[in-house]
Image 1 (cartoon, rainbow, N blue to C red):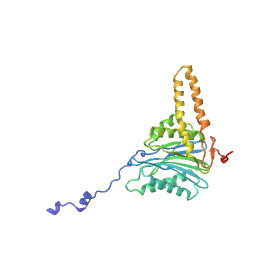
Image 2 (tube, one colour; image 1 turned 45 degrees about the vertical axis):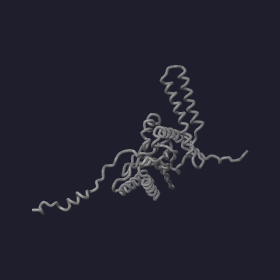
Image 3 (tube, rainbow, N blue to C red; image 1 turned 90 degrees about the horizontal axis):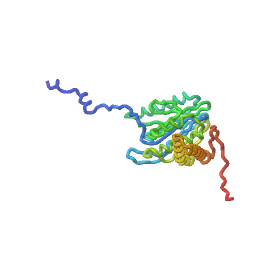
Image 4 (cartoon, one colour; image 1 turned 90 degrees about the vertical axis):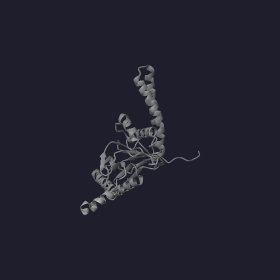
Length: 301
């Protein structure tokens, strides 16, 4: 009689040691960063800030742009993640796979990226870190921009923003910057969006901005100081836009004169004051060409 009331051993073990349950993947943006990718005439521009916010609230600064190139292709990635070292390992594996053999088409690049994301996700049996990244690929005959999220999401888009700063820049871009422009103009637009993200969401976004212009030739990394100058000049762009809107909503003659002056001021800021040079002292033009500059003159004359 007693033996009939005794619970089977396997039920006792299940009660004491329940099987771990892997919950559904949480769909939210990582707590830190702003990363932006935009198609432009002749290529792609990708940029990201350097601010990192840890779970305990402490902050640090690090580069979140990764660049790789081979004889026939070039790749750039910008990431936002709750586990930076793990995501850096993923991107290293992706770039190593892409460079291990010639990639002659975008579908072959997509296949390699998806395979590495699935492998990386499977290596975390209790749930992979929440991670998303911008991936840009440029081949001799084509280029593309992707929003990637392990284990297998890889969506081709013309514009991408990742991290918490995306909540700030998405509506601004959708209103102001929907048309595709040249790389120089696109860099100005991204500098303005970075300024707004850092200004309006300073708890998650900040530090310097690393940017790269990508085409079939090796990626052109933009000097950080020129992105910083463009972001600082964005304060005057805000002022010019306020004056333009005030003039549009008003019927007075003074407002119409103010409209013309505001447009002239905005043009002066970005036409005369802002330029974008690479680490090799090359200037990026709006037609996608890159022009080398003469070496600086350090003479005392």
